[in-house]
Amino acid sequence: MRYRRFVNVLSVTSECFPLVKTGGLADVTGALPLALQALGVDCRVLLPAYPGVGEQLVASRATTTISDLFGGAATLVEGTTTTGLTVILVAAPHLFERAGGGPYVGPDGHDWPDNHLRFAALSWVAAAIATGRLPVGADGSWRPDVVHLHDWQAALTAAYLNFDHTAGAPPTLLTIHNLAFQGLFPQGLLSSLRLPAAALAVGGIGHWESLSFLKAGGRWCDAVSTVSPTYAREILTTEHGMGFDGVLNERRGGLLGIVNGIDLETWNPATDSHIAARYAVSNVAAGKAANKAALRAEVGLQPDSAAPLFCVISRLTEQKGLDLLLATLPRLLAAGAQLLVLGTGDGKLEDGFRRAATDHPGRVAAVIGYDEDLSHRVQAGADAIIVPSRFEPCGLTQLCGLRYGTLPLVAKVGGLADTVVDSTTRSLRAKTATGFQFTPVDAEHLAVALGRACDLFASPARWQRVIRTAMTTDVGWSTPAAEYLALYERLLSR
Ligand code: ADP
Image 1 (tube, helix red, strand yellow):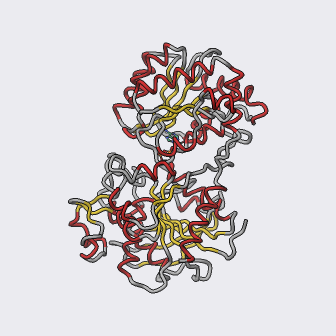
Image 2: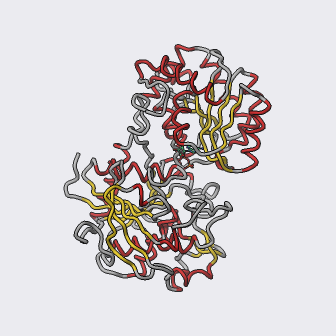
Image 3: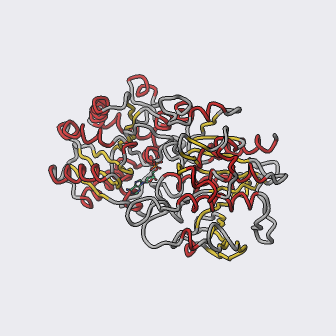
């Protein structure tokens, strides 16, 4: 399907795979534009030039200069990634070129103290490109028809456009990838953001005693979406709305939930160069057995053909519910299973999993760190992936799990509820089961689900049947990209 006319989209984000990634946001902003390109959309990604990012671009060139971007000079650098994305980098050394740390935190693990300026700058540039004040494109004439903002780091764009009053500014869409991150700063910083006092008036970006970047998107974007239908419903409630349910409920046109996909080339067990043995549905049993043996050897787990190998690939935070897994670990081990955790984050959880690995050598392994290549080998070698999140806007690791025949065992929340079919007598008979769900999200119900998974694993023919359904589930980007395109079309026709 091609769009009836060429649509230009500016996708504004603070991270983008393969250039810079701290989590699922980068996967989405790296893959969705490629899927949109296949539908005839000219989607360009606007991103800060963190250290090492510019060097990864192919055929890059500096185009536009900005004499003062929140305290220093900046340049726009345009180029493409090895994956085929068209990218516009905001090269502002005073804001983004810093040794150590990452996109959001410094080497001390704390937020960069000027994050408000760093992401106001990104948003200000987005608004200036949207209104044509900053020329981009080969001859400087490229203009977006739609501006797609991702999360709070890009959301202030809507405020600049709202107070700019330039005629003909393109419509805007905010996608909320995680409502827990709201871009909250002291209200006293408003003037440093180049916004008028009116921005804090009733109906503005004031949020209790703070100001919120995300709220700018909630207030002034033409449409707001999030990354699964269930999460879209959840965040309209007081219980899960994190103080934003009011703003979101006020929106005319509602809140759309579009489930993320994964990049089917990056995540393909039939071609994956990171894994020990490549496989497809037709030879999945042998393929997974070979990958499991290699993975166990790599991380120091015992060979044990009767033991299901459960894995976790995750940020170790309160959201992800991994304290519940620590609480259920004795029961998991008593059932004869093994556990491999790849993750980093909260010190207490890191210590907890490290200690579990020391206490149960050969049965529990913990790799504390962030390792993209290893995450592929874990997906290929494990039998099941546990995602016990307290809330989960969409979740990507369960989608990779489906693709690799690593059955997801998930909390029934947000996108996890939308993407995994629980193994019940009925779904097993109907051959629609793809994994396991549990609710409510507590250690007891997690333990029950783990028990059900161990039981099914002990019945290899039935386990393989579920694997086949999981691996043939559509987890790619073509359907979600078509939904985004339909949304852009609606915005353009208003
Ligand atoms: P979130 O964005 O909330 O962290 P998602 O499930 O949406 O969670 O996306 C997480 C992404 O980050 C996935 O691509 C996952 O494979 C990856 N990931 C998370 N932790 C690690 C890790 N320690 N090592 C490698 N990849 C990781």
